[in-house]
Image (cartoon, rainbow, N blue to C red; front, side, top):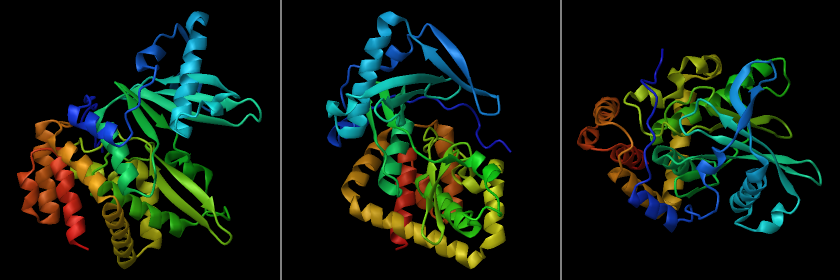
Length: 342
């Protein structure tokens, strides 16, 4: 079943959101603009390891602008990784710039290499989309994961989120693998499902999140991390905000059914809600500020708001949703329900 109704629109940054970004250090002026990277004159198609078209291209710039673009990108990386300390870029060079042909925000993926040891890292340059910025900020505040990003006018700069793409994970791991802990992975999927639903992050099929694997002395731990935030509070159906309903995630759902009882599922859901509650308590003023801004912003069509508030009112048996006039107000009610349940 296709849960996403249509390609999502890009919403501009409102003055309220811009003010919030400035207040919390997310609005940073740089000389690099998204449009600068669109000035490429040629490209090479990027194929994956199996020889399939990846829908990314490596872009090539004219020599007259290539050096300038590379210098701007290195300074952006210094801001992203070291609060603007340019000494870190002394031994760095830009190895490759890739462009994605299908994503909403038209991302450029920049590969940065340290020439002293050949270590490399990535970051992204995208068209700024208010929905995605709300998604990044709520991920930073409400999940276990800190997110490094900033906005420069209509340009969004994001760190690379490390992990194994979930759609590749189960093809590379099986029960014969000594480090593959099915029960722990099932538990994490339940918690990830709960995190997405509480803050209304949609479209978390297996291509849009990664699995961070951490070996321990006796076992292996997993954390599922969103990498696509374009569908933050946009779609009208509640099932879009529950990863369990995407057919691509069926292997993870099967693991839950195989290893967890209903009682343990409910326990893990309560645990995750408790963790979100603690994060809200620890960052209550900043969370209030972002939700207040989001409540006044337009990041979804009216028909999506009207249907989602009806479905959530029925799901929670709470008519407070019916008075919501924006997606931000719906998220606010969802968080209030969580807080009242503690």
